[in-house]
Amino acid sequence: MLTLSVLDQSAAGAGRQQDATIRQTLSLASKCEAWGYNRFWVSEHHSHPSIVGTAPEVLMAAIAAQTTRIRLGSAGVMLPHYAPLKVAEQFRVLDALAPGRIDLGVGRAPGSDGRTAQLLNPDRYASDNFPQQVMELQAWVTGEPLPPGHPGHGVFAYPSGPTSPNVWMLGSSDYGAQLAAHLSLPYAFAYFITDGQGAEQAMHLYRNNFRPSEDRPKPEAVACVWALAADTEEEAWRLFESRARWKMDRNLGRIDAILPPEQAVRDYSAGEQRALTELKDKALVGTAKQVVSKLRALADHLQIEEIVVITWTHDPVAQARSYELLAQEIF
Image 1 (cartoon, rainbow, N blue to C red):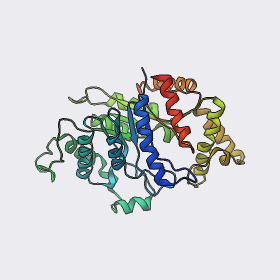
Image 2 (image 1 turned 30 degrees about the horizontal axis):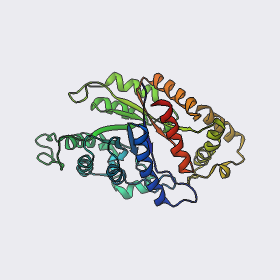
Image 3 (image 1 turned 180 degrees about the vertical axis):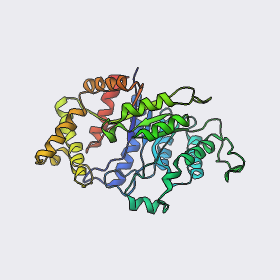
Image 4 (image 1 turned 135 degrees about the vertical axis):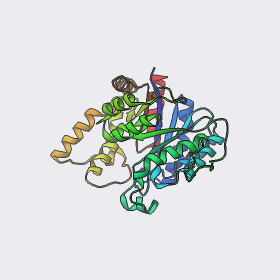
């Protein structure tokens, strides 16, 4: 059985107000719960014209208030920007609002450009302390005391309760996979960032180096992929033009809101056309049956049981329809 979950990045659409984009993420979460998805994760980016979800913990609180079953998570909190104690407190509050449903995904990347990252945390070397930060976060999230001699010994993150958030390690390289294995954490590989490069190696390292713990006796991994389904294959590829144009423009250093499909098509250079052809060859796009078949094949290849799907469209109705179609095909 393949389990499907959702990562929604609150992607901005050209001509649409950004505050409406956040509310659309909120609406999509309720729909995905009704359609049977396992998790609904939201991301953290800063000063990014394409992705306007900047505060996952705030958005998760709003989603928690209107859902009852689906797991909610961050994908993720960019931990080097913050004090682990404060992050633990925020997510313990979330766990009080949605007991046993909170995933705390953490990442080392800045989620922004270098200048913005320095404004969030002036310490340029903050990411060097990432492993220590994660260990402190684990302790404060679970209520385990930090050892004597640690500055945080005797300090606890409240509120406490019978459940606690699950800490996840997010990554797109061997680093995150090995750290997740060492700290006995579940691991999410950002397949959509690397277009699959390094995924097999990272999963292999994670499974082979995983250190079982009392709370997590065996490894647990997911892959986050970009996919799009529509009622017809032709319509799916038409909608994909928005994503393709964004990718081509990003390669040239131009990052902006997603264009509607009819405005996204432009004349590409020979080099761009080769890149576009390669992008389409790898894309998980088509009817629900076609996409689910590709998702199952990918899950088998990576030896995982859950895939987290990201879908960008200019029209939020088309995005929701894609998730609905995939749910109908697989659940």
